[in-house]
Amino acid sequence: MAILVFPGKGGTGKTTLSALTIKYFAEREKITLALDLDPDSHLYKLLGVKINKTIGDVVDRVHKEKKAELEPKKPVDVSDQEYFLSLIAEEVLIESENFDLLTLGKPSIDIDCYCPVFLWSQYAISQVMKSYGVTYENVVVDCDPGTEIFPRKILDEVANVKPIDHLLIVIDGSKMSLDTAKDIVEETKKSNLKVKNVACIGNRVDDKTFQKQVKEVAKKRYGLNVVGFIPTDHELSKMSLTDQNVFEIKDSSAFQALKTVMRNLNL
Ligand SMILES: Nc1ncnc2c1ncn2[C@@H]1O[C@H](COP(=O)(O)OP(=O)(O)O)[C@@H](O)[C@H]1O
Ligand SMILES: [Mg+2]
Image 1 (tube, rainbow, N blue to C red):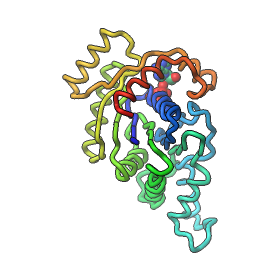
Image 2: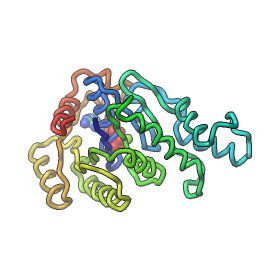
Image 3: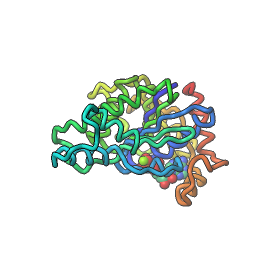
Image 4: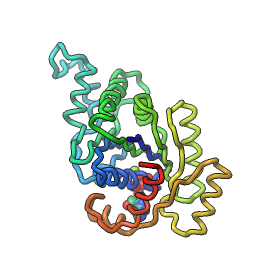
């Protein structure tokens, strides 16, 4: 059982590797809670499901109901928090055979305003996380590329329920992706995010000599280990273009490499 988080610079492969990891667990008949924390939500496509609403949409709806002093559509004996949680369970949580998916999305209201609905989002996540170890054997988090407040707070909440086992920062061999990795590590320390293992995973760094160089630079200049390299795989590019999902691809060199990484991490 483990919680795995994939942060990293935009376009490095966070969503792709998150989806392949969920496929890896599914093949082992392990149910995963998938969390898409990128406001630009794409994970559902690679998992082959449709989403109706995001947590952000529910935040908006409840916020509007409160502001307009509309009577929320809930029985009086149900607390606001419970009402919020029921909306998440009914409208946001997608239940599938091998995984459940929660998509954060993006609320349209001002993020800086002190607003209880944001606290309820955190409450909702902590409640869903209570199923960890019961309904879910693993949690896989596809992060946003930036440092927006809303996704950070949700990630904090996940780590408060149980420390994150592996923060696998996706790099593409560029200095920029390593600099972003450094920023992520610093931010993690600043916010006291509870993490057991922080490492990098190289994606689309195919040349062996270059891989060695990337490994050395990551270690010497950034103090980061690289747990493995996932090759450029045209099956993956085709998959995203033709609306296929990760469960439909058969011959994937990227998936084979990811399996090796997961096994090396004892997952
Ligand atoms: N190993 C790979 N081989 C081929 N294409 C890849 C690979 N990893 C990612 N891609 C492609 O690169 C693009 C960006 O990947 P994505 O997972 O969306 O990155 P991120 O989530 O970090 O923004 C997508 O079109 C994806 O299909
Ligand atoms: Mg992504």
